[in-house]
Image 1 (tube, rainbow, N blue to C red):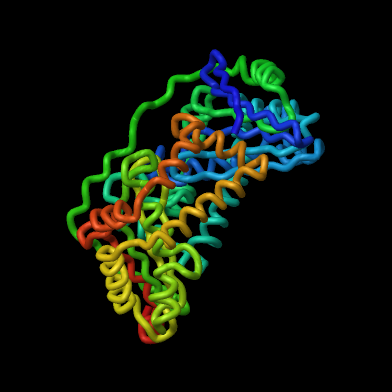
Image 2: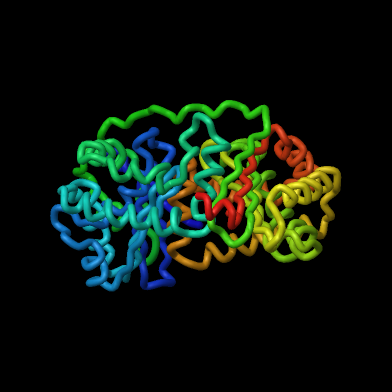
Length: 418
């Protein structure tokens, strides 16, 4: 992917990807802030702030309306490490996107009414998606069990509803001033625009926004886990569920790509090992999948499954452990290895088709250190051998490195006495 890089005097990084085959453009702003930058008692602030960013700014009372007037659409997402905002619109209207994003970077509307309106929205989202949804709080339990020190111990939505309810105006203002600054942002402009024009507009709309001193406090280092952890949860769900996780290296660390390939072999697609051995060949698992959380700091390899009615999570774990042990003592055939690498190639091709995906990938890998990492990571992944994947599984997928949540269907007796 072609791009040019610039940096404004205030520290804002600008990446421009020119594509003359389209009449569209994307303006993507990535802020290096996520739930990893939060502290206990103030969790969920990063996600809450994503909502606040659509509450209007000094010159833009309604962000969505302003975008729609020029034929565009916008959205955002927050994860553990970043918050990402994007606007897609006709390239001829790209300056409107510059204006909108610069205005909310410099002068977001943080009046009490806006803060309270968005607080209500986020509280309702917390209740609907995590508290009132079957298995909705599963990852709350998984993260809290697996992590003792690091801020990955709570999901992006926040650890407790009370945290969101108790945010003060001072908390919000401090978060804004600490993280929503040009020297903490990556601006990507992609589409039918020349690099010189993109730079001129960046200087015009973002150049005068002052840089601010950034906190360099890193999250606490998570200690090495030396003993298996378990937790049993009782809830009003249709069947038991099992969540078994292992600590793995961070995104840029040795071993991460191998861990990613482990989950591809174990749990990607209907021909995967978990699907064939646990779902198709037993009456215990209704579903089973595996994936990694590819965060900056060391995170988790997750295997999750739902049980068929009448089967419990503890027995399901025994079967899962048997499959994992067999996998650790096996060899990966060239055919299986080629299949998972073909899947990686197909995903890379798919991501390159859409302009928005290209813009977001450019921003994300710039955040990791350099857009070149995207291609380098892909090439390294293709060169990994089957025996290396198995060796990594033996090192990571150990009992003492595991945390297990048995998410149990509440029995009638328990439901009656609760």
